[in-house]
Length: 312
Image (cartoon, rainbow, N blue to C red; front, side, top):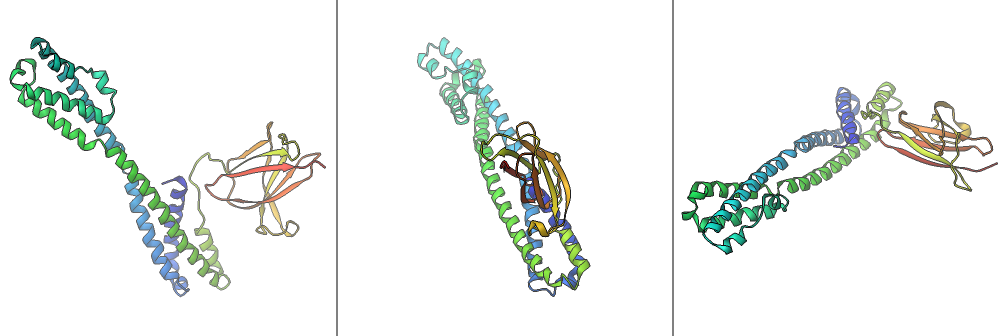
């Protein structure tokens, strides 16, 4: 899972525990119980797939590489022994057929490594009666054939697991969408008791908040430039104030300054940490008209702002 999905799942689990204590209030609400059942079922599915996703896929690659190296070493050893036999038997055809080194085998694609091993096995099998003195026997042939079979069985495993990983990723995305859809319906139903159950309503909203667990991530990143020349503006003051009016007309909003930043030499600015919510952004620079905007900050998401200031 991505860190955003991890954060969402943490919220799902804590919210599930929270609202289970308030069924007397929520169950009578239209479709709330149905959506709750869907939500809980989806959480269980997410946890199951997440566990499957976290199962190490590295093991398949390690097994393949181990079997591959065994085949490389064995095939190269066979080629050397067969080369000696071909020399003493004056068999030029055989000498040509098995003329490949360990480095050539090791640098070959996976399927070619298998083919080289099969070649030396087949050539040895044709002369098996004469090869005992050269260190190739019926037993070594059996071991080589088993090594070829074992390697052939795992050649495609890492790629297959990458494909499976992509399918799991898509499954998770769909499950998170399903959970969010169920939550949205529950949120809508809870509005019915906003005035009659104010304490529950506030607690409900708090339980629905996502707390980011990612360290040292950027929340806001942007730049301030001249609207006419597109040149960066250094030293512009950026004030982010909590928008208590949720984006209403600026004159009717009471706000509290939360973060103040100055644009750097090349006009850029960054904010590492700022609570999620709606903010009023006021940008001021001597010689330029003030710039105001409403900005929505979401947990786990980088907000990019490109601000243009016009001269007075």
